[in-house]
Image 1 (cartoon, rainbow, N blue to C red):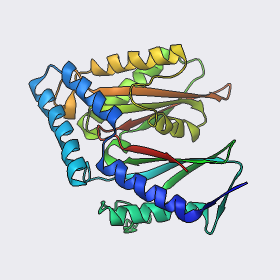
Image 2: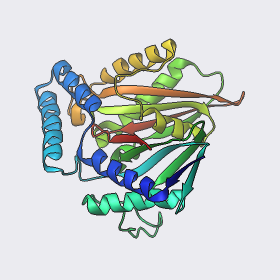
Image 3: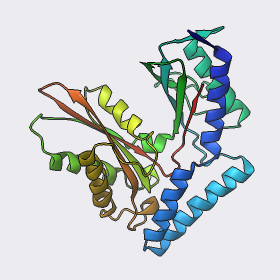
Length: 280
């Protein structure tokens, strides 16, 4: 049994929160550069150039990529042979978020109650998804996601007889309804199967996949590429001002479901795709 001090978890989460918000990952930058080469609209090309330049300035000056530094969602894989000592696990995660947002001078966007709307002043609590896995390590993945893109997400309970074309239509219509509000070019996470509550988690988890890496199943990978092409034909373009590049990637995650249902969730992410992970 390996023991990990809770403070180490907090320190790791703090670091990931700051890095995610100030340093755009290489896979996202590569996707943006490819988009710049594809985009034909002069306005669209200028927008993508500004997005890339903004990322360079944020990295150089250690400033947030966007003023909305997001709600923190943490996906945890805890080895079954790990024991957390000297503190509670979830409390350590939230301590890391609090320290990261205070010490990193990141905007605090979380309110204590959906209706009272009083700011918690440290961007906690985080949304935490924990999975027990074999081994004696802890994998921590942090997604800091802005409210604008999150608000454009959707779920639909399809009939089990629904076709792939009907699902495509729902996904594309969700992106079209988002328009400029999700700050395109976007990343689209799709969750298919599970249950009403699990499909959106699958959709968000799909966003964690490295950009440029399609699904391991050939048919699903083909479906992802087809959806990118269909979404880009909508003409929404960078920041909704028209162009060939509306989506940088579509990622699909599937899960077994009940014989009478077919849930599909779409989680849209803006161009400032802020994901970081670490293993301790």
